[in-house]
Length: 234
Picture 1 (cartoon, rainbow, N blue to C red):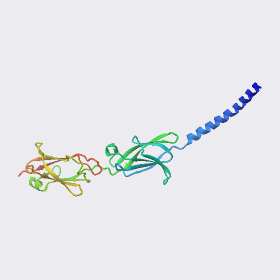
Picture 2: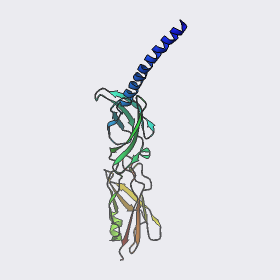
Picture 3: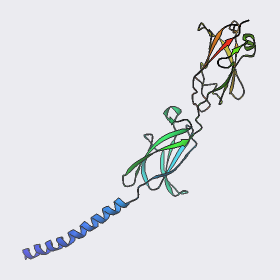
Picture 4: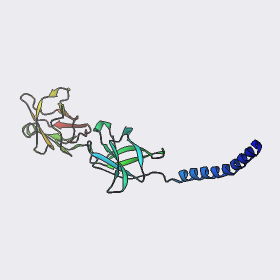
């Protein structure tokens, strides 16, 4: 009897084993055929402190932006897709091109697959620059006229006059720094430099004006600019 039962059990096992193998293979096949989750859309104002939202074609359980975890992952009922939100950090922490912000996005889907994509966010983060000066670089001017009217420096963007420190340095040919006062136009685009007593320009001299350490209103630093000009002899 024991022998017959053992044979019967063996026969059943031989029948069930191929069936289980088929089911297991089919299950693995279905898992392999599951569509990868792609990043399909994103939006942001492109300004530090604003939100970056990205949408995915399927469920995601983890999302990182430049190595930092998303502030929130949720299903967007309006769009019908999974969404991750992240607050753009300060200027110093962003990867900035000329007019774009680059963000490395890494995500893991519901079955553990990880993918990544680098996205480029259009941005207004264009650095300010010195657009025009009077005197111009390389020009020869009348010292008395410049002393009276002042040196004019115009920028391509509004300048944060509260943040900027030692922005203007005016020196003569001997490297002596001249102490000139600075006033700004109401839109903070044009600066006017005028000499303090005893610091006036003199005829027949070479002067160097260095403009640096200036930022626009969203914190983007401008390039250093050097203007060399000459004063005519009497």
